[in-house]
Image (tube, rainbow, N blue to C red):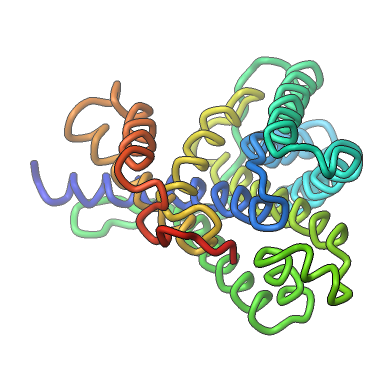
Length: 293
């Protein structure tokens, strides 16, 4: 196989892998502050793309206004999910809360189907322009947006956790919620913030990917599973490992689809997830005894 084809598969893998990484980041943030896996994370990604599309078609907004509005709406939905469903159930066993998140996922997906319909939709690219040729491969301008926004999110998160009191308070909750509470940190506020941030990064993943792949009411299921696989691959509770895990899965998925068959594309994430659960449950970048930071 020529090098240009391999490079093209790599570029495509990095593009979708960045979205998996943002989805995994959302999983990690909620896990760190609550200890549960939010299986509605994929629906946050779906809602980001769908709300941006319908802000343009129904609201008549231009793309630069539709995208931030969609992200803000999904962030508000994330806060509402915590306040209306998770907070009243606090103190229940983790498996109960996980089942609640599965119910939320079904509710959001069903609501999106009723409101937006079952058709697939596309979002215009953030900037016009021809594909950029690189060593025989083609780099779409939207790919630069995807990679650039993902890097900006990771850098902003690093600064938030390292240099802000609120970020350090969230880290304290991740280490020991009881001790953080005894030190005067409002754990409930930190949990609400984690839902807001996870919804925000999920929505960002949805809006940057929608111009490349079509969006629909049911795309969140597969994106959520692949984001979860990336989260496990990077080490559950490790935010930067989650992003790296997403990129690795995206590249392997693209390479597998190009070299073997596109029919294996979606199966690769499941194979990686199962292999890791059997061989290294702590993930590639996690410790045998993981600290949730």
